Amino acid sequence: MLCLPILNQGRLVGILYLENHLTSGVFTSNRILVLNFLCTQAAISLENARLYANLQQSEARFQKVADNVPGAIYQLHVTADNLTSIPYISSSS
Image (cartoon, rainbow, N blue to C red; front, side, top):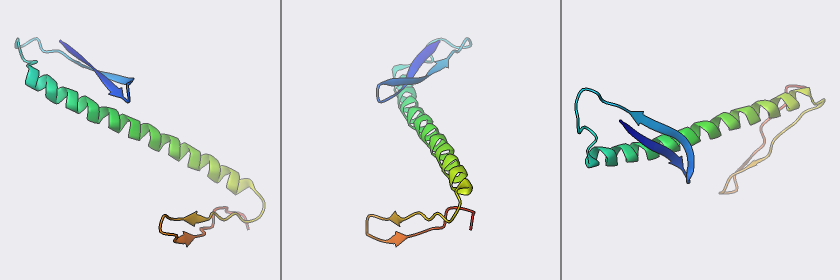
């Protein structure tokens, strides 16, 4: 049996649990090294998924507010190279 923490910036986000009853000695130090690397990648993926879900929820809330405000709402976008765009946000006219 092998348990490894899945950590993101020192915060526990999961646990990798593996067991093998068929063969002894399968969790060698080299395999554990690879599994630690995979745990690091899993932590990054889990955090990205959480951030993306939060972004989607935030955008949905913003769109709901924009759809219920009388009048037109535009959003000003300015990029790092000073390109601007002003997309139409609200569905009201």
